[in-house]
Length: 557
Image (cartoon, rainbow, N blue to C red; front, side, top):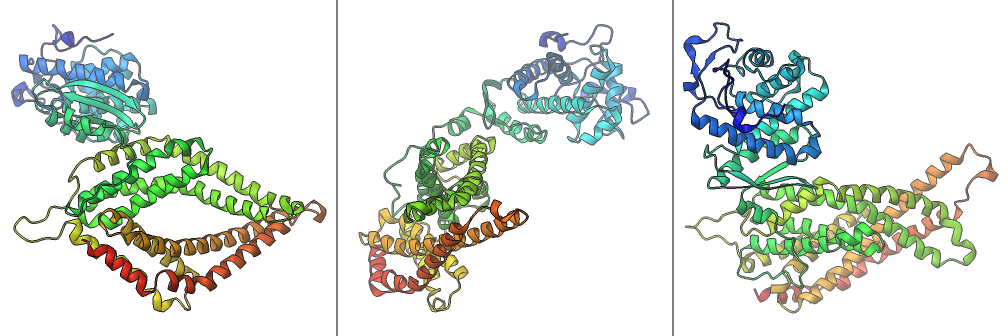
């Protein structure tokens, strides 16, 4: 049975009082309180006929509910009969006193069996009762126990109740004029664009109620008015030669430009990363995510924390997915260079190690592609694209009647010298610094370099020499960290290999002598880098020339 909206809004001839106001909001003039059953758990009340206004609203919500049912059908895969139940539920979701009943689902079933003549079989009645009761209360599966619904029926009831709640919210204004202009099932969720005089109000109400849809486990439903859709569906930024920051603009907007610049770089290398033919595409994409994360720290003081947090979480997830593959690329690349330095007869000695790393990389790459294909990643890109293209979004507001430094020319010197101070603080500790401390210093150098690079377009010409000097220290410490990590990984590989083969006869064991030699080579490299770091520190950083160049770079502000 398919219920037509124009027919469904009419009460049955033999039961003129069986229908209630739609959409979970029952007007007081619809209920005759004097006729209510004394039993508070019973819904049997005398309900007057719908007014013409209520009837029009019911038809409007039914139309919206059907459209949402159709666009989400690939997700829920429910039959047409479920849509019929949804249409009927629109008319009865405002049944009185159900939410207040001790067992609202049983009260809803009693209501359905007494008032709803369009549903004859018990199983459909139970699902409809669950929809009505859930629409009035909380989305809790445990409430279905009273109706003895199986898991499939529970999912059907929750799905229909969620669609009903969103459809009703799309007429929060009670204008009856908000309509779905466009809808699409995308990788990251269901996009619903609504229009009409009260679209902004109704879209906001629907977005708030759309959370129940995601609670069921579906891709989210995003409801947007035309103005919001213009932002959410705007094209991603194209790579640019410069960030375009200005010395007189607010720090928040300079930060937004920096983030947008590196976001475009990340997107530029995504296709190559997915393809996997050139490992440099992955490297460049990962670098872009790192620079964006560093930008959050440099420019974070200009934004509200809650505005940055979801974007930072997305960047971290992306960085983890890329990093697992990139780290193995670096290990394998350096191992290959070591092999090339060996005589031909020793070239096969690292095969056990390279095979192990190749297997790990294959698994890490599969995980990376799964993440890049996920709704989570797609939504992160959409959200972040809106953020970097919306001026003043998430920015802190300075008091209008008090002086407050918020421009690039006012704050950039402070931010740069704060990073400089954090690095110089390591100076007295370097002679006996353990490798863990040097690793921490490497991170501080990276922050200093990125901070200078972010403001480079408004700094003096000497900024180039400053960045190059910092890069020398950063590369030295980066190689040291790689050697340290590789040494530990190689040691673990050797220990694991020996344990796995200890039960085998000696003649059947794999010879990993060259792996041991390679570990010794990386250990020697680590020692060399440790021994020469103090010289690199003094030559490229801890000297008057570097400090003078930095001061000259900043003085133009």
